[in-house]
Length: 88
Image 1 (cartoon, rainbow, N blue to C red):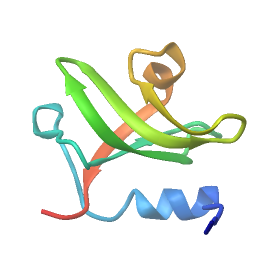
Image 2: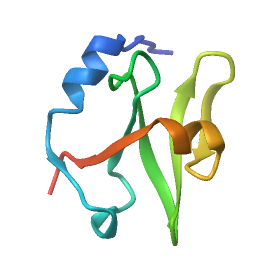
Image 3: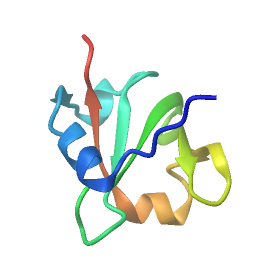
């Protein structure tokens, strides 16, 4: 299996690519970013489902591997930064 750890500074740079979206523009496949370290963008996931104001996204967890989480979880509510669309 191919594996590469994306460094936090790379994720911060990744957040500058594409267009930052307004909430009514979010779609499955968009990238969702979080400020988890020192108030800078340091975590990224990909949106898999949108139900009203809840966004589910797939991402890699240090302790659990690849998982699906929700913006309804307190941690992700607190650290949410932005959603970008890289490909139009």
